[in-house]
Picture 1 (cartoon, rainbow, N blue to C red):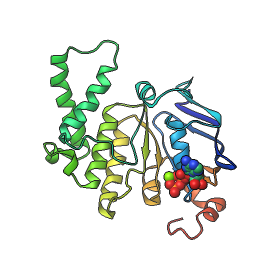
Picture 2: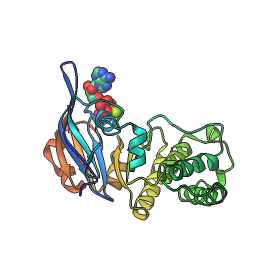
Picture 3: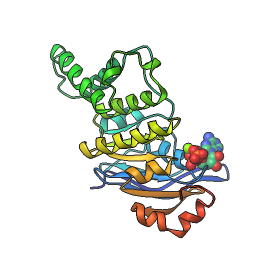
Picture 4: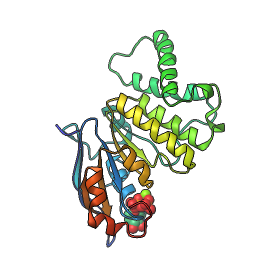
Length: 250
Ligand SMILES: Nc1ncnc2c1ncn2[C@@H]1O[C@H](COP(=O)(O)OP(=O)(O)OP(=O)(O)O)[C@@H](O)[C@H]1O
Ligand SMILES: [Mg+2]
């Protein structure tokens, strides 16, 4: 069974077909990058899948179940989590507290909740493990709001992973990062994604990041899917090269 299956995904704003009959699949454990020039429809696809926008036509199936009408909360409970382009952390809480809240949120949606005392101890240990995995251990006592932009994005990824999703939607995870921060984030993402079984759908402008982490690349242009395949074949695809004409890395 497909983890995520979008069929004929369409979003129109008046005469503009921002997303035009796009088919898009993600299998368990797969890292899929969604790329395309400005205005191609990437964010719109993302928001249609995440339940943040209403589709004009088409359907989204997650784990064999049509999830068209579900809220982002219900999607998260089923194992589909997202990060936000704008940071969604609690700035007045510490790094550790932010991750603990994510672990607790996950545990509290279980049918048989763990007794609260045991939960407090285990969430701390687990939160510390996630923090270690994104290399923020030395910052774990600091308030999230005072971290550098790059570290805040890493903390967001830790929080999203702490929800233990089956599919993680990552919205431009390296946006606003320095070249150095971007490089180390790519290294980190690679290890994290190798270790955990999570599948990822990634919207990303930085093609170095895309080619660094993706198993498969889907290319949009003016709302339509123009390519879908492994990185090498997408890179060599003439239609993709045309779409990216004038863009440095293509
Ligand atoms: N709320 C809206 N109302 C009308 N048109 C919109 C709206 N949001 C996006 N669009 C249009 O839909 C098209 C696709 O936009 P979208 O933001 O999905 O592109 P994108 O691929 O994410 O671009 P970028 O790389 O710039 O982030 C664009 O032409 C955009 O102007
Ligand atoms: Mg966008």
